[in-house]
Structure formats: structure tokens, C-alpha cells
Image (tube, rainbow, N blue to C red; front, top):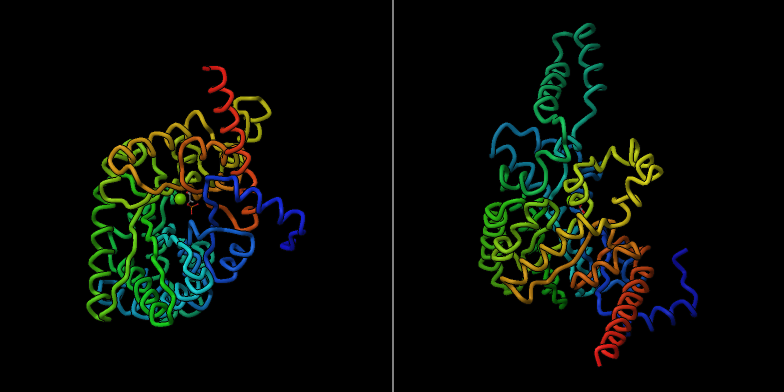
Length: 380
Ligand code: PEP
Ligand code: MG
């Protein structure tokens, strides 16, 4: 129930006075952004833009974009998506009333937007028998060919995140333009917004360098076209072990880091985040191979070490580098305490977990400061 009792609200207000760790929410639409605010989030730490593309009304245009034969065709679809995306971002910025909003550029496995392969195969086979000369058959056969081309054995390790932006920069360019257009519209309405644009699945600094340049150039174009000035940040998800291990190089190109511990857990353990929980993980926990599900509770010895390494290396280059976490762990009590100790600036979790995160962040501060005090007394 989103209604919080007066006593609980009072407790949360005490927690807010104590905690050092910021608490943001993961939200992709104005309703969730509103909920995030209601529960006391200090901003949005992760807006997953792929959810906006999944809108049933948009799927045909998104398919047009993916199925395009060439750049020109893709641009026709992107021009249709641009005003829709702009509206999405205006809605979220407005709902957040000027609080920070981190928008992550598109990060789907491409094939997720396409029709089901098996169903398509059945339709094609049927048409081949009943209506072999129809244009419908030709269309479906083309679609099937594309679905096959886009299919991957490991989609979650495949052509997603910035790998998509690297191969089709016009997609990320459209999104950046939509974000900046939305910022300008809100400035005109008297609301100042400083978006934080986040590049997903970076594993090599060159990916971030190229995508950052694309965002910067797009911002310059929008400034020139509108005559408006605005500020923005460009940062990256750290969710591939290589990114954590080369965080010093990556920090040169980043205004902030956000640890994507869902993918970081997947890639550190080598467990598929889509399959492991339904297959062997439960047995592993029962056999005490693992103390708990690492997708739910942050594995401090492995994944956590990469988080600490990322923070340390990043801050060697940029001492004031803003750091957060936006994987599922950002709403889990012991993981939040770990984030506090690793020196992160904020955690970001689903809106409903924000109250818990506020309490957990306060508890982490109290426990840590108490042990510091004890240590001081002992050393005296
Ligand atoms: C993550 O990988 O932790 C993350 C927040 O991104 P997503 O879950 O969308 O891959
Ligand atoms: Mg991820």
C-alpha cells in the first residue's frame, strides 16, 4: 500500500537526517516518477528508455526502424519516434520537478521488438500453401529473414547497449535530441532541468568516447537551433567487469558512473540472469555453494570487489566523480550498506523500495559511525 503511516513518515524523516547515501528511484514514466517522489526519492537513477519503445502503439514504428534496409529508411522511422520520445522525457522531467533524472539510452536485445519467430514460421508455412503469390507472404518472409538475422545465441551478451549505438548512432542521436528538445521546452515553461545521459554496457573506453561525442555534438546542434543554453552530464553504466577494471580510463570520458549490478553479477559469475535463478541457483543455495542469490543480494567478495575497484580507479582520475548503483541490489538492505562503505553517492531502486532504502542508508551510517567512534575510543 503506497499510504505510509504518520509514524513511519516520522521515522523516515529521521532516517533522512542521518543518512549520507542518496536514494533515487528507477522509473520510466511520469506515473512511476510520481510514485518515486511520493516515497521520497531524491531523483531518478535509472530511466530505462527501451520500455518506452515497447508501447504497443509504437512497436510498428520500432519494427520499421529495425527492419530498415539502410540509413535513409531508418531515419524515416526515427523521425516518427523523435516527437514521441520528446514527450516521454518532458513528462518525466515535469513529474520530477527539477530533481536529477538519469536517462539511459536504448539497451534492449534488438530481437525483443520483433515478432515471435515460431509464430512467424507457422504463418509463412500456411501462406506458402494457401496463398503463395500474395504480398503478405513476401512481407512475412522478409520479416522472418530479418528475425533470423537478428537472432543471437546469447542475446543478453549480444548486440545491446552501446553496441547498438555504435552500429546505429542515429538511434542514440535521436534519443539525445529528444532529451535536449525536452529540456528546452521545460526551460521555456520555467523549469530548469539538467539531464544525466547514461550510456549502457560500456566495456571499452572507446565506446564511451564515441557515444559521448555524439551526445555532445547533438547538444551543440540543439543549442544552435534553439538559441537556448542548458547543462547536462554524460556518464556510463559500469556493468561489465572490463569497465570496472579500466575505470580510470573510462572516468576520463564520464561525468558519473552507475553500477549496473544485474549485468555485473551476470558477467562476473558467468551466470545467465535470465536462466540461472530458474535452473541451478536454488540448489546451489541449498547445497551452501553460495550463501544467497547473488542477483538479489550483492556478492561482496566478487561483484563488490569490482564495484570498489571501479570507484577507486574512477576517483583517482576524477576525485569528485559521482557514483551510484541502479541494479536490483540498490533496494536491498545489506547491499545498501555495502554501497555506503564502497563510497557511492547514491543507490537507485524501484519506487516501492525507496522507503526501505532510506532506512537502510541511515542504518549503514549509524553502524559505520558508531564503529568509527568505538575505534577512536580504543585508539585513544
Ligand atoms: C543492471 O544491469 O544492473 C541494470 C540496472 O540494467 P538492466 O537491468 O536494465 O540491464
Ligand atoms: Mg544492465
